[in-house]
Length: 76
Image (cartoon, rainbow, N blue to C red):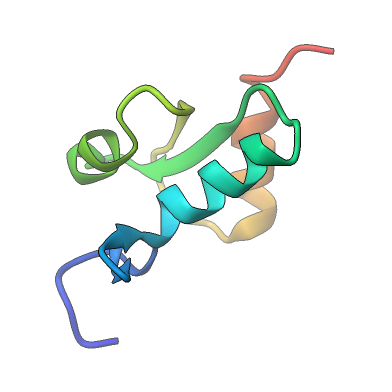
């Protein structure tokens, strides 16, 4: 994609893809979520508001590293 907007913040039918995912997750019965975001994450916080907890990935090192970043935010 050739855009300054992160992929997951592009809209489908007027709703950010991130919010579609979060809303679907909550509809399925999941009660909390952690979203891994880059260091500069204001756009994510504006879009998702209070729907999720954010874990900051200071340096993009792939999805495995992102999963490790999110695991620090979760509780059994």
